Structures are given as C-alpha cells and as structure tokens.
Length: 550
Ligand SMILES: [Zn+2]
Image: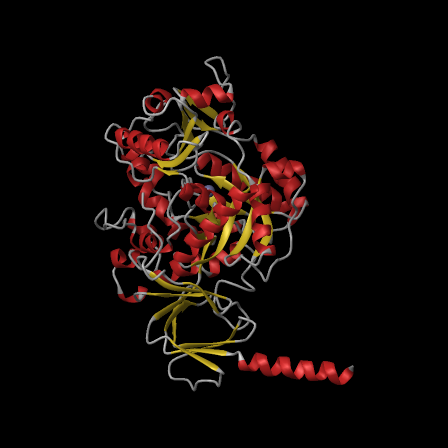
C-alpha cells in the first residue's frame, strides 16, 4: 500500500515537472504594485497553471519540458473588468441589437427586420439604443414602436440599462395603463419607463429558461475571452444567473474568473451567501450591489443642484440615508462586500457617508466600493481616500457621455467628474472596467481613453479635462491589479507574480509604443487562462470578436 502511494507520488512529481512550460522570447509588459510599467521576456509556468517565476531581459532560462516561443509578440496580464453584466452581455448579443442606431427610423427598421426574421418569438426584446446619437435626441415612444411592430409585445432597453421603451402590446401585457401610478425613483412618459418604473414592464417579460441562461452565459464568456478579459466583477447577478454560472462550473465550462456581486433583491431571499472560490478559482460570490441613483443620460442621476438642462429636477434618489444604512448593514453583517452604484454628486455624497458610518461599525478593511463615481462634488473627493473606498470606474463612459454630460451639467460640476487622476490623488483605490454591455467589454478603448481623455477618433483634440488623464501604467494597474484588489482576488490574479494564475493575453501591438488611437484598436491574438490557451481567433473569423461600438 505504502509503496504504491509512494510510486504514485513519484509519478505525479515526475509528470508535473514534465509539464512545466517556459514561455520565452516575449515582449512582456506588466505593472508593479505602484503602477510602474515593467518589461519581461519570459514566464515559467508550473503544471498547476500558476506562475513559477517571471524572467527579465537575458536572464538564464530555467529548464522546462515544454518551451513556447512567443516570437517577440507582446504579452500582457489578462484584463480584469471590475464591473460588467455577464448574462446581459450574452442576452444582448443574442437579441435585437440596437447599438449604434443613428436615428429613430433606423431603430424602427431594425425592429421590423428582426420581427420578420423571428416570427415565432412571442416577445421581441432588444437593447442598445441611445437617443443622444439621433438628430433630434428625442426619446422613442410607444407609438414609435407600434408603427413598426404592433402584433406582439416589444421592449427595447436603452444602452445604459436605465430606461426602456415598450410598445402598446407590451404595456397591455404588463397591465400598465394611464392610471398606473409612477413608483418613487421612476419616471414614465409615452411608453418610456425610467429606472424604478422599468420594473412595471420588466416583470411581465417571460423569465428566461435555464437553457436560455446557459446559452447567454456561454455567449458572454466567448465574447469576453475574445477581448482578453480573464476576470470579471459580475455585477447585479440574479439568482438564475448565479445558478447558470454554477452549472457551467459543474460542467467544466468556466474559463473566465468571476467575482460575483449579487443583485440586491437576493438579500431578501437570504440566498446565496458569500462563498469561497469554486471550480479552480473560477467563481466566487463575494459581494452585493445596491443602487443609490439612476444614470445621467436618462436624468436619473441624483444631483445636489438641479440639472443644467432641466432646472426643476435633481434626478432620482433611490434610498433615504436610513434605508441605505440598514440595507448595507444587513448585507455587511452577512459577510458581503458592498458595492453601490452612484452617478450623481448627491448620490456619491450619500454613499461616502454610508461607508464612513459602516467603517465605524466594521472597520475600514472591508473594501467598500462605489460603482461609477462619475460626478463627485470636489469637496467630497478627499473623503473617498480617507474612508479607504474603492472607486470602480469605466473610462469609456467618459468618452461616450462627454457631450451629454456637458448639457446635463455646468463646467463647475464637470471639474470633478470622471475624475480618475483626482481619485488616485485622494488615495482611493482605482479599479477599471466597462460596465458591459453598456459599453463594449473591449479594454483597449478604455485604456486609450484613460491616458488621453479622447475617444477612439481622437476627440476632443487635447483631451477633455486632460488633468484627469492617468498614465498607461496607472491605467493597466486599474485594469489588472486594481480590479483584482477590488474583488479580494489580488492573492491569485491581476499580476504575473510567482504563485498567481498564469492568465495572460497575446496582442498585436505594444501598448507602450503606440499612440492612444492605435492603442484603442489593439487586437487580441490569444487568451490564456491557468497556463492554457483558451481562445484564439477562429480561422475564418476576423482577429477578434465583433466590436460592439456605440
Ligand atoms: Zn453596471
């Protein structure tokens, strides 16, 4: 018995040393703990898929059974998107795609075409429209949809997820009439349902089956890998979504590592609770996400002073101070990390106060997160660093929102908006992401925006409030180490340090050697997780998954 197990052990040791892989001849780039860019030429990866050591310059190469010659190609740590919506990404990709529509007429035409191509769908669901890209910038109405499709319910969600427009058949199915009262924190106008009013329609939509969720999850994971995203803070994860992720784990289909934040509704059901890492560090329930307000585009962001372009409105406050304290206190007592969506300066101030109060009760080591932290009163900025709050921000929101934000706000309030550099200077920990599918999960336009305050076309010249630029090293840090820290995962992902998972990407250009517009157009050639290649372009396909620009 004893000899057998010793023999087995010996065989295991032999096979593991055999399976060491040396990645060599790489143009490796990563950042250190303080956000400085570092170069390396190779990696030794153990049989367990973890980094054994990183090799700099012409250091002697360690022995390994397998050698992988990168032929000088550029290698980066896998990207971690600190804030995305996984199942929505997959569902949107499988539904009517309205991203990039340039007019109401184009939306109507895409809707007609989709309805004709899907005669058996009982509901037509779509997403991605943005009236800010249309000539008249008017929100679509129920009548606009009725004139395209009237024979079955149609529900089309705005690109930011904070508003939807329903046709008459959908409102009828949902039992919404002119007499339906508008819920607090919501707005209804001509078939448009904003923030808390959305649920009046959403609850009538048939819930997706487990098979549909599995399909959406698989689609989402494939899109993420195509953009070099190897880790995700999975926000507002519903119970059904969580079950779909676990099914993928059980079946060995989980590749990307998901740090999951439950939808706040799950708290009421008392399930699920935070978990340890599961399925080889692929899945973990870590936190819970609340909302303090809505979004700027639909004027749901809660502002201290009224909107510049709607003087009778401060936006939408979702919770009283007492309510938010009580919700977050309950969640924290169950061991959840807290993440709160806050866009407007009033919402951010409320969330900071809530965290200051929680610090008094739980200590400051719980890594409270503000999601978006877009518009912050300059006077509140120093409080974020002092309270050890993580600012989870999305650089491409700045480039997408710029013209809209200039209308909603005045220059005084824009000074501390999308203020990445000021956040860092306040001492806040910065984590970057995209809020996909609100934006494409492609991290490269985000890196580009972060260092230039310009969009992919170089607008505006000189950058928008350019003092808020960060360095490439700081941007890469926020997208790797910072995003891992934001999810309590810096002990295993976010860098290629010894002992960390060998999650990395091979790309077609060196980010340190190109201008911001070229950086934004970087293509991923290979995505590796745990030392194993899990994605490369399909032979007939273009070099990356299709861009979901907006
Ligand atoms: Zn989000």
